[in-house]
Length: 236
Length: 309
Image 1: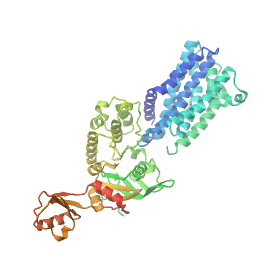
Image 2 (image 1 turned 180 degrees about the vertical axis):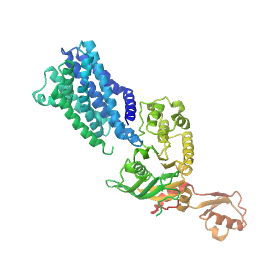
Image 3 (image 1 turned 120 degrees about the vertical axis):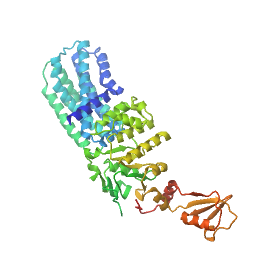
Image 4 (image 1 turned 45 degrees about the horizontal axis):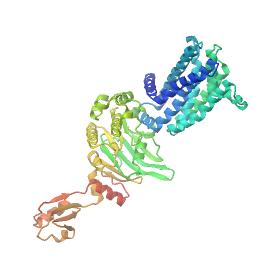
């Protein structure tokens, strides 16, 4: 069972990394954002944390949502169902693969941030980030599965992703620049992306794992996993 | 109604199967079975319910009522154990990873089966050996179709569902696939195949199922379907000087230099012609084709399945 899952995960990572669009938005796009943004902002740690969180969201949320929808649209999920491989193993492998790719993207962002912007990124702090990244990935990845199971096509999934991820990111960016509208200050701390930014920023700054953002992520993850399990147990 | 084959415990058993999509009645109580190693072709016009039948067999659709069993198990409850023995070629949506090469695709899927066929062997048989390192994204439609067939056969299945497997293929590829399927069927593999090619049905099918508007019009060998259509055989010969027997003369059509007799009992009519002393020069006897029988049965809309198989 675990061997099958590991094998399927390695294939899913290979397939993800061969998708040029997915690779661009997971690895290259955050780098471009980091490069341009760092020239305008004075707080490199906050910028790097924002971009690293976005990289994880690109793999865990956008990648999974669009990947699942495309797999169903192209008949891949149906083909998997026609084989002896349990569908749950395949979906778990997709989730794990997105997690591995997401952590790699975060690592790259922090590495580049460390070198180019002089951030205090040590190996100890990076490993300390793993629990927070795991919570963030579960929160975003589970909702990626939910969106992937709701959207009938990859295009529809991309609309749903843009309609949810972009506002969250823009609100967090606005908060960073101090231009957040009053109404948004109430909801921002409850959003998963903002919680992930705070977790990454405070862990890298050696302030320890912040409890409220971590619990927020776990709550989003729990709700997302329950919804994903319900959606995926129905015929797809 | 006879639905159980006499060739052994059926690998597929369908009893009074119905499927409704809202107001649309896609299947209206069809019943049939497949014995181990049996080759059955499902015919019918577009929208007659062929793909719906296969989708239910594969457990991808739930029937509205009736039963669909595969290896004795309800098709919606097939376990990985039964899936080990099954293969599928889907009509639409190939379900392939465009980012992988042909060989990688087979390597990925072979890991799902306990005793898979070597990919090299399938690549050779399906004429894909030279394309094995090409990404699926760059394959032609026909090459993708052959790869789909390779995936269906990868697990050494005992039962394969093929939804128009040769649609869009060139004649050479079609012949290659027919040969491969015939060879595997001789080894004991059963298949249920849908097609619009009557040539394919005649060559591959031991039995033909004819669907129209979700009803099973016919179930039996192709020759029985031709007989069931009620179409006459055409006995033609060079126009003779001698008079025709009176009971045959009314059925003979003069076509210039030739006379053509439309006959439902060709053996008896030929004997009668010979006895009459006619020379029967350049005698030709042509049976109705499966295509003619297919069209006649669809036009006639026979209401009950004829289980002669």
